[in-house]
Length: 318
Ligand code: FAD
Image (cartoon, rainbow, N blue to C red; front, side, top):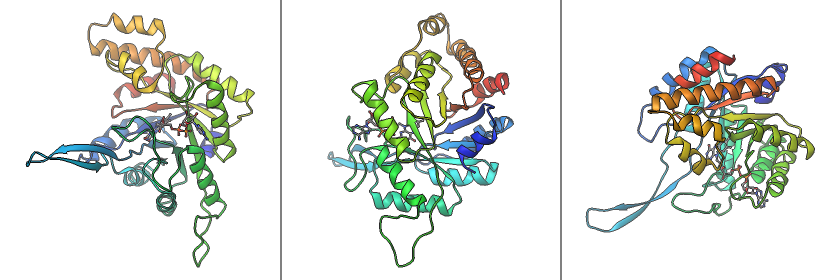
């Protein structure tokens, strides 16, 4: 079923959902599935699976030369989606990227998902391919998520890039997109960011998932502004419980967000990561309580490979 239907059927009750990341190339899938298992207690109606674009790596060769290779460090998104569907009977939400794909490759990818019985996609531009610092689309690929949203919407109407001899049946994807309560780092200002977020919704996005935040005010202000701008789709808050002291610096740098001063103080007095992890759980529980009371359609947890802390949080909320 579609994420939008799950939200509708919840009838105002806040939904629990998670995001998982494919293992590093060559690692076993078992760890990932074992990590998801305890979260089934909270009956997530959907699970997101991230997609990772290619990276350019310079590898020293035995003869002393440097070889430039393109590698994809975390392949397997589609296979993991299929495993989630079959093992848990939960709707997978594969992430679909502009970066690294031509329009035709994207179309073929979406046809695979459609044939697998996957009803949902989260459409993203993707970050710049490492080691580059600016995003560059592949030749005949898309520069912005809004363009890829339009392609999926077209497919949902039975319009494909190239009409074959036999017309393809329309797909029926529910489309999610990302947004940033603290602004996307490349956007010059909030106004511009909202303009392009609105375009994603106009092009067919059914709902929004936010980047993580640690200050609920950012989410509430963001939702308010969206409504003022005429963006009416559900906005699911994304949450990540802090789990190490180092993340106090790492998360703001990676995800361009601010840590609230009270939270910083509480983590700074921790003597070790076990204590910091506990503070992270307690802070996240407070966030979740407030978000649930305010009627957030869901709480979407970024697991980043670990689930024990999310189990503890979910037990307090659901
Ligand atoms: P867009 O919506 O395309 O926006 C990118 C930037 O361009 C913004 O600054 C926007 O304001 C600007 N912009 C948009 N349209 C235009 C236009 N027409 N003209 C000029 N400027 C424009 N990354 C991955 O690689 N894999 C994942 O699985 C993944 N999952 C994610 C899940 C969530 C919930 C979130 C929040 C992020 C995820 N990301 C993932 C990261 C994401 O790819 C990056 O944040 C990326 O930099 C932006 O993606 P976007 O889809 O929001 O881009």
